[in-house]
Length: 169
Image 1 (cartoon, helix red, strand yellow):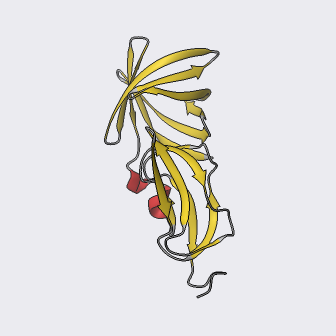
Image 2 (cartoon, rainbow, N blue to C red):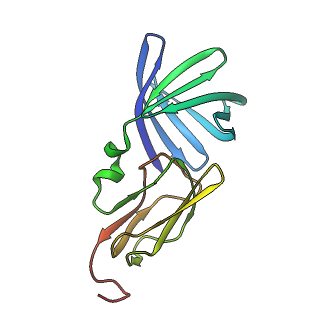
């Protein structure tokens, strides 16, 4: 499970939001309530979103930390924290996603020792896969689930630094 926070603006109205990612589903906490969504990419810049028993086509465009969403004649701006403020950037040993996408494979488990260069996970976006490897020896502390949608810099695998593992010093 992964959390993302930011602000949502529509016209003059601005409100904080939090998104709890659960695989392909998300629970959006906004304006004192919550909404469950399932998001499925259709084309670049277009999502099919299942919400409240109906399907919506949402057009989107991202620029830096800002994402513009357009559906049913309304435009919304979502402001996300920059990746450097994400937990992955502040947790020692955190190995954040190199791009927004879906974690298609997690190749390690908590407690597992790793060496520099060992494969940790694969993130996929627009049919491109990116394999992320350990940058130093250590032990896996936690991972997120396969199928989780992540943003650039989101914490996927946390490795506790160490010089000795089961593979040797």
